[in-house]
Image (cartoon, rainbow, N blue to C red; front, side):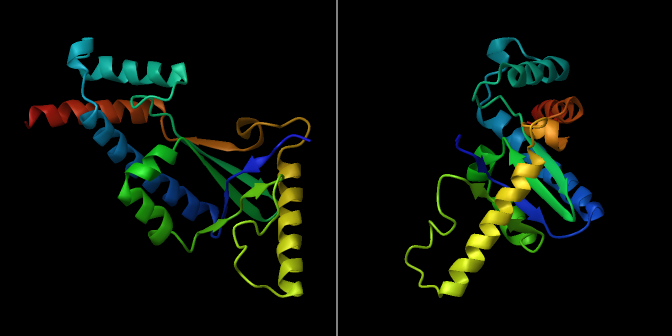
Length: 193
């Protein structure tokens, strides 16, 4: 049996609210990406002296797939299963650690819209609550919920669809239009210095 780890969230509202959330998330992503470019500024040394060159450079960095401050690749995959909307974030881990506004956006501003829906098949469902005393009924409910998550993920990733791109809808935070917006914002900021 292979290890399966799905770090995801249930979306607790409707698809229209999800679109608003994703658009707001893109704005947070643009702000963070801009701050990263300012922080790791060595473009002039690389001959990147205008918006178009920076836009192309950022696209090339994503294509390399390397973990690098200039690889700004990030996306959200949305899965629809029966009456559930499940979302997974990709490429936001470094942003999350680095940007308090993203943490606040996810944990405080949208906490009523996101519910943990992670699943790991190599651990028990209450592994992080060892010091919590529970009744037998509570353990049974937790195990049932965990088994339900297992079933949901098995249905989402069936024999034909075994990657997020194959099984869900991708909201690309680092699409070409967004990369251009980041590059433009970067060079506009240099004009005000």
